[in-house]
Image 1 (spheres, rainbow over the protein chains, first blue to last red):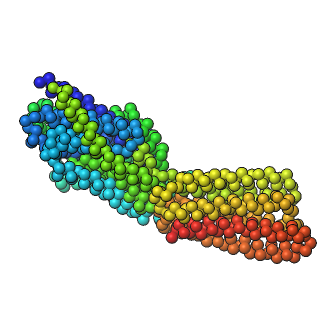
Image 2 (image 1 turned 90 degrees about the vertical axis):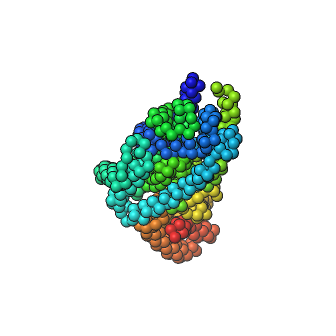
Image 3 (image 1 turned 180 degrees about the vertical axis):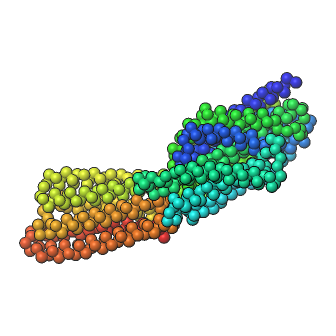
Length: 416
Length: 223
């Protein structure tokens, strides 16, 4: 009996470590766009991130967590030896966390998602057997890694083209911005709310019919759009600043929109990435409390809260510096461009979260930024860096797998 | 990992290009006090202004070098890299020509003959105005990037370039007139002095020529 507490304790510790790492590092990429475009100050960004990361994790993090927890390893094979799965999940958490730490220190662009999936596949394939991996599901996940940046890029391209067409290339961009930006706010709020309601809320005990879901999302979105419109109408043009830069006030209008998309981005990030920390933890808890592998027990809400809380702590302790550094360097992403990238990425990620696909937030955002670039929206994109990111994509998976295998055999030898 | 997103963005050449044009224009503008000093025969003042021109020309070179170093081939930009580098090159030539003109006048301790002095001052002013118009056009570069090289902003810049063309045509006309005036009095001048005066006149005219080429380069970006 005591071994189970050891398992849960270790898993919670490693899970917290992972969540902290995600908050310290990964969140910065999600929030830095807003800070870089000066739509939010760093303090505001931390606040927005804390609230919405947590909300995203708790409200919409269930499906991806379930995928990480039981979608990759075929638990049926392990019904006789449940402790193997415990060792494996602990090893995966530690492997992914360690790899992230190494990578962050060296400035390598790696994905938390890729490392944890690589780790789980690694321990299962080598530690247990090739058949222990649900290769079909893993194939789908890998496909989603290719599809998600492409989708986000395509959406971002369309959004930014519409912004150019409706606002930026017009005679009076300010008047047009004031008219159209509330509509963008509506769409941003509507999409994210709707997907959350449709896919996420059931496990919190809220079940709505399709019509009710649409009505609720509509109501929320209209409310947010109205608040946004009020703030937008308060913005007065600044002739002095505009003389130097014609789009000065227009960008401030987009700044309001960017606050909304930043919330959406934090929410989306929380909903998808919390699983990387708590998916394995949930698996360990499931086995340790019931003693069986194929448990159908629901995900305890405190686990989601632990993950969300860990992310917030990481953000508060370490993430703020990272946000500041990254934000300072991406000033090219003005609100009119940044919102397009954020909205496209957030939408893609939230949909992925709803369908249980663990995707990389950062890579999706990179895809979205490239989409804006293709729409002639960004002054200069360094393709060398993009290529390096592609490479790190591929390297992270075997690296996570290798570490997980090492830790797996270690735990199997050491742990009761 | 943290810097990955930031590193995707190469250094934007837009503001540096605007800055470079600003320096090139400020350099050209110095020609006004310089020529005034030359007409007045105030060697000391000429030397002082000449030093300022050299300094600004150097500054422009520095910025030019920086821009080139920060524009690797791997950059993906809304407009071709080559076009921006060409724009930079002609912008830089505005400063270069200014330095050349002041160099010849200074080196030879030239004195502008009184008969053409007023005309020459007007001519220099017109060339500086063309450079100013080039600066005004280049200042729209960031707006052009924001607007994605489409719509109202493009028309605005096209109008600026149109004006620039007219300004350059005016300097051409002035150049013909001033040459004619010089021809009238050339017999009264020291022959070598006369030759170099013709030289200075055509060199000065190249400032407006380069300004016009800045317009041409910008125009290429619009299409």
